[in-house]
Structure formats: structure tokens, C-alpha cells
Length: 407
Image 1 (spheres, rainbow, N blue to C red):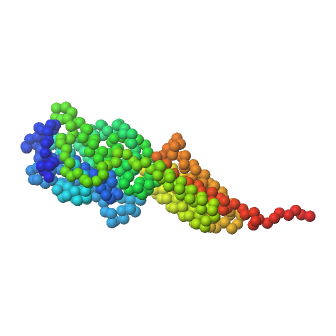
Image 2: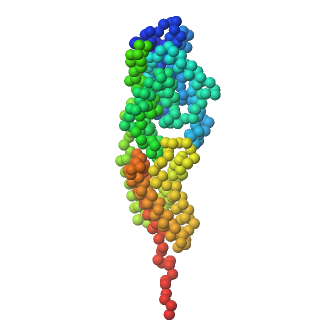
Image 3: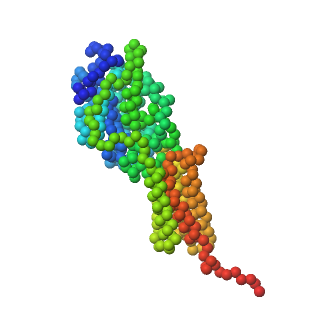
């Protein structure tokens, strides 16, 4: 491993190293791992490696450790998921990622001996039991942003200075859908759950919540050497293992057409069943609205009962509307009386109108949101269901007593 990482160093601060200078025995490198098969591996991973050439000790440190068996999904939904940092022998790390068929790249970093010591000490401080845990946020505070911040800290903020005002033309949602594209169900769920905060344009600094973007930005970075001249921050690069898998997508999948067609087929099919008097029409409409209600309750939970800022201000709630439960309850309780049917009629009208508004909300000023595809998926069926419930709630003339005039 030592030969792979330390090979072909040239230029910059390390040329002036002397064996007598504290820190000169250390080699620091950024390790970037590509995408994997599991859902949580879709974003890639990264770590900081430190090799002590005087002892041969080579450890890779990362901030991406978690315990899946300890209520991972529940803690994630509540925004209480704790990650922690740890270290592993570099050779074992490489073997693990090779076995998982994930690309592994290393970039030797051009740090002065004092900077290497400072980074090592910072990592050792983070390794302490009382310091190693942190509350995970998939965009703002994750394993990659921790690596980014550690490197930025030891070079005096140069990485942030170079990237904080550099806009990328991308957004958190854009990247999330791009990186999760191979799991279509997950993509749809993410698109439903993310709110408007994820649609704003992000900077190159923020974009480094993705490990591969940290790799790219440090490759471009220039830092001052001992004379003040700007030199490359990366001394050398090497791919230790190249995965046999499809390359990382360069853009998100186009969801509007396939999901829109599915939505039209579902809505059209429901309409035809109802017009043909099929018994399955009403149970299907009820099932669809129950499902929409469940999703709507989840969206409200994420907004009001969790710290998931990425799920706030979510206009998807107009289509995935928990008020459908109120409509269904009114149908179950009051459909036998004239007054109850009138209540059902107006409730269905209101929820149907909210669904229709949900179709245009993503393009309205102040409500713009890049999730039209998942609204197109459900809006046609929801609108047909609202129409069906209204029709069913209309007064039946044959049941109304005739009006007679007094003699």
C-alpha cells in the first residue's frame, strides 16, 4: 500500500521535507470510493489516510460508520441518526472495497509537515469516544462534508474560499435523483419526500456532500507553498481498484414522461371502471386515496416533528394529501343522510381542488419545486377519485320525498 500511495510525489511543500522536521514522516492522502450496490452506497464514500513512514503504520479514517441493526430506519426518519468516525488499516480497507466491487482512488495531498501534524491531531481528537459521534444530515453534515471540513481546516480555509461562491447549476434534489437513479422506487420516494429547500442552486462547496466532488475539487485546488507560490494541492493520483460496474450517471433520469404515463393510465383506468359500473372502481379509488393519505401524513411528520430541513416547504402535500382520510371518514359515517352526503360532496370537492392546485404549484413563483413527475404520477387518479366521491354523494332523487302543496 505504501508504494501505491507515495509513488510519484513531486513539487510543492513535500519537496522541502527533511527527515529531521516533525511531520515529514507522514504521508496524507484522500481516498475516494465509488458507488456500491446498497442504497446507502449510492453516494460513494471517502476517507483520509495517514501513513507514518517511520513505523509503516497506514490507517484510513472515515466518518461513515453506523449501526443498521439499531433502529436505523426509525432513527433516520426521526432525524436522530448518529454516525461516528473510525480508522482501519489501509490494506484491509482496500480489500473490503475491492470485494464490494467499488472503485478506490487515492490522491496524495500537498501538506506541509506542520499541516500533516495538525490534521493527524484533529483526527485523533475526533476518535475519542466523547467526540466521534455526530448527528447525520445527508446533505449538510455527512461523511463527505466531514472530510471536506477537516481538509479545509488545515489549509486555512483555502478549499472553501475557492468553492463557496462558485455556483454549480445543480441542486441537492438533482444530485440525489442522479445518484439514486438505479433504484427507481427509491428515486420516486426521494422525489416525494424532498421539499423546496433542495431545489435551490448549490455552490461547489455545498456540492461536496458527494465524495466524488471532493475528489474533483481538491484536484483543481492550488495552495501556497513556503515561498507563497501557488502549487497543486494534489501531488499524485492513482486508481487502486476500478470497479466493474456502470459509471456514475452524469444527470438524473427523466421521470416526468414515464411517471406521467403511468399516472394517466391509472386515472384513465379508474375512470373507465367507474363509467362501466364495475364494482372494483370504488374499492380501488378508496385504496388509492388511503395510500395518498399515508404519504401525506409522512410528509407532515417530516415537516413538523423532525429536523429534516430538506423535507420542509414541500408542495407535494397538495397531491399526497392527508385530508383524504377526512373524506373517507365522512363517507363511512355520513353517507346515509342527506346532510352527511352534502359534507362528503364538499370535502371531495376541496381535496380535488387542492390536487389540481398541486399540479400547477411547482411552477408558481414562490412555490417552485422540481418534483412535478411524482405529482403527475398520482394527480389523475386522485382527481378521478374526487369526482367519483362527489358523484356518489349527490342526492338520489328517487330517495327524496315528493313535495306536495297544501290544499
